[in-house]
Image (cartoon, rainbow, N blue to C red):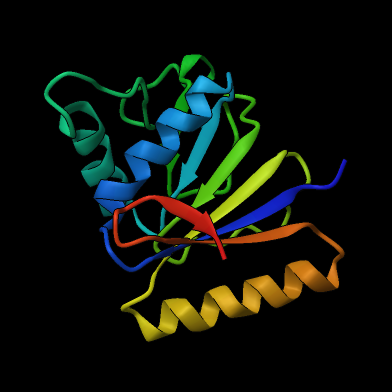
Length: 149
């Protein structure tokens, strides 16, 4: 099975606003998740954010400082690791992983206001197409819903 590549272009929301919605959708499908960030600082910030992003909800997750990696439905890391048998990989803040074959889906989330991030996403898109991977591009409507473009 080939990994499906999805690209989410952030134009109307920040990563902190968009990521929890996408993680919730992944958990509803019964998937385990790895979120790979560009830095340890971002892991710490997202780790705190996912406990408090909504008053009536939280996302069960962990990172290296929490331990018990294999038990975490969502694993936050800045490393190239999959300690929780995740089916889906989210790459944020310019994080890169050369080998994604173990995942059903790889989701690149990139900031449309960052020219470097947009250029990198285009490069990743082209590389995925060259490898013959199924690629899908999503952008947000003015109402904040994700739609294929």
